[in-house]
Length: 205
Image (cartoon, rainbow, N blue to C red; front, top):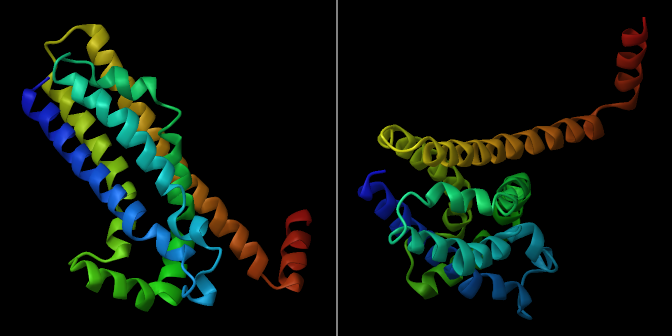
């Protein structure tokens, strides 16, 4: 595996953890303030999803594992596999993202814009909330690159990388599947009862 890829993975992981921590520190507490808009009250989970859990995992566990990879070559795949269940957090985050986006657009833009100006930040909250979606895709690309570049390594090392890639790609698909299921349920709720009964009658016929 090229040293360049390991360093890229580690550096981008540090920046990712920093970005998640930035949201946890500066934006999450705003919803506990007395002056929070009525439509945002009690909506911390809906707006931020499981971002705080993602931050805890990456800050306290996965980042440390990746740092160890610099001293233990070819262990990257092993660490992805060790925490395969934790990467399931990403599918849940993706499932919640449309609700988060809707809440932010319709009820939170002005409120959070004030904090952005106060922080002097060029990036708005919506950009930070997109980070987990971008990160899981980045893992997939990096693992694919690593597989291409380690053709001379042992079968077990390549096997771990391949299995890691499959874990990440599964979570990407699972997130999309959960979104699709929500879309179908929303369509059923919005559908006129008479149309629904007619459709069922046609199917039986």
